[in-house]
Image (tube, rainbow, N blue to C red; front, top):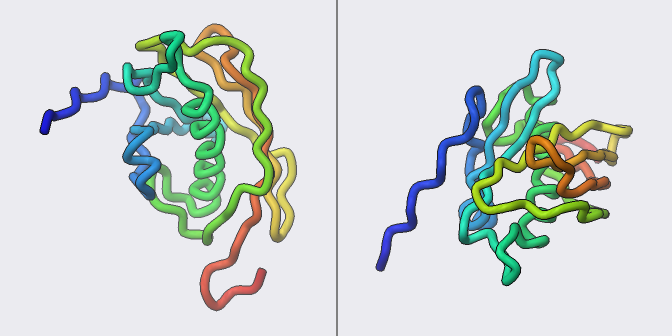
Length: 153
C-alpha cells in the first residue's frame, strides 16, 4: 500500500471542511473561507487524481464540487463554519452545470455560491466556479431541505 501525497495547502484564511461522506474523503479536501460580507467561498486544489485523459480537471470532479457548495448555506444557517450542518439534511433535486474552461493541474478552484431563493422546503442556488482568474463552470442547483428529527418539513 502506498501513501497518497499530501494535498497542497489552500490559500490563506481557508479552513478544511469536515469530511461528512466517503465522497468528501475521495474527492476533497474541500476548504471554506468566511468573507467580510458574510458570504463563504469554497475551494479545492486540482491534483493529479482529479485529472481526465486530457490532463485537466474531470467534469465529474467539477460537478461534485458544484454539488457540495450548498453545504456552506447549511452551515451558514447553523452559524458553525467548517463544521457539520446543524439545521438538518438536504438532498439535491437539480444540478445544472455549464463547463466554461479547464481546471489545470495545481490550479486553485473556487466559488462563492449565493442563495437565489429559500423556502421552507427548498433552496435555490447559483455560483460561478473560477480558477481565480478565468471561469471554469457556472452552476445552479435546487435542494430539498429536511428538518431535524422532531421538526416538520
